[in-house]
Length: 377
Image (cartoon, rainbow, N blue to C red):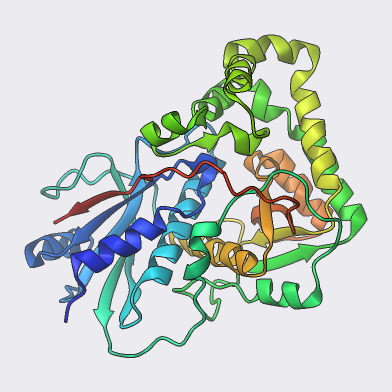
């Protein structure tokens, strides 16, 4: 029996709580139920025709970050995490598999009837029913509890058992890790301090490059109502601290691009960078996820995002929290310095603090209706 649109929609709804850079939720999907639509897509991309339902996963051109080249990778990683959680949420008889991936720069689909103009295709999956019960470990129960935690962590390194579990993370569609993605857990205090030094040196770029900060600021959400209105973005209480309405309005003014331009002239950006560096330097464990190559394909970036999604849920299952520090990856000079520090030829695609959060907040802003742009053809 072909998979129903109800089953697909249910899994996509869960997937919309996947991690994404700035919580942009940049994903979009085209579900090809109709045979005519499937044949048109397959003909355009020279792939075999399938009787099974196809889902084309892509990016929403109006919801992606654009100010830095590395943001392209971050958006595809976000899409991959979305696909991972989607596949984790599917009923077991329906098995997903790749049928197509775009290997060149994104472009819009302009000549297929009914396809939205905002859609940037990346990969396509077929969903076939094979009647087999999938006995792989699922972390779907931890999807609702997944959070970024930026505040205090307990001062203890991960155990060998926790590290082993985290090292078992895999993409649902690459269970044997053919793409040779790697997980490293760093507990060496000197290396952790070195990572903190990199943040201290380069962290100001997030705040002093006006175009970058303006884009970041546009994703801040200052109240529950604003969060629900946009359906995406970063709750200010998750970034700075829980605060009342008055404090939120004050921070909204102080962090605005025009005021930041003034504050940065007296070293405010450097102060923020040093504060983050201090937070990271106090860590007992840092995680690093890496590609096997310096020039990963679009498909490999999506697979890496799925790998990341599984890693994050593995951490949740162990009661661990993550604090991503993407600034060290977003600028080429800093990324190269990081690889030199790590003595690694592999290109990192995700790095951050990991451990047991103290007083982990339960009242983080969770948007009632996360973005989930879906078109059914």
